[in-house]
Image (cartoon, rainbow, N blue to C red):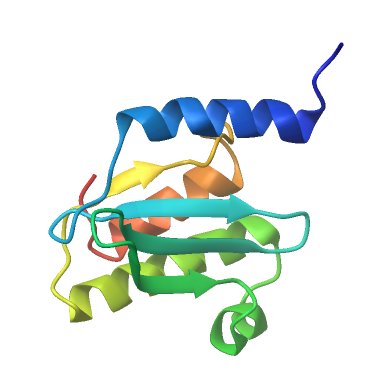
Length: 118
């Protein structure tokens, strides 16, 4: 039986999650991409807490950009600023089973521009 696109992405995501883990000093940057928005959060997997989050649904980000790729870049920069204010500089990038292309790449580049190292 053929896998659906969502199930295939979920299998890839599980394969990635076996290899990476976020800590308090180096949290995991988890990305979720829907058709309309993009969401990301910094997660400490050892304690099971979210340290910072950002999405394209926030008023500052949604108002200033037009395309979804520009929104993803703005979300990455915004998350980078929030992480810097909490003293986080190094992260582990979790692309969530999506290809490192388009909006996912734009978010990663925005996070790097915001001051995160990965």
